[in-house]
Length: 118
Image 1 (tube, rainbow, N blue to C red):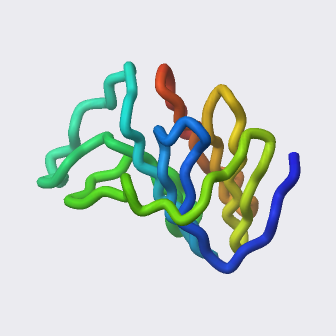
Image 2 (tube, rainbow, N blue to C red; image 1 turned 180 degrees about the vertical axis):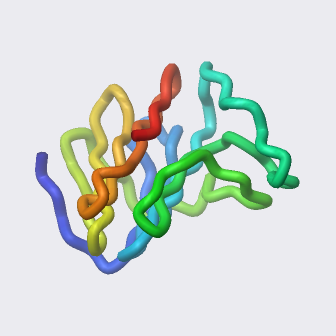
């Protein structure tokens, strides 16, 4: 995997289906099209639930947001490429996008047909 170090980035996958905002301590990725269903919305989420994933403070989870990153990408992260900012790295392959906090090992994989949080 060809990984480039950056301070921050707003990027999309080649399919234009996933858009991410990456900073030194966090990443948030929103997905346009998905065939999976997110888990039940938590009681404390009063915004849009399950349209993406995040890593923040070393932990990963499903987003609860009132906005979207879709349409804001500044660059495309090609398949077989990755970006790293601080401890957070994202890698793009044809089967999906994986982001992880390299210090804690926590992260997520996001794709049209599946997702996982680890």
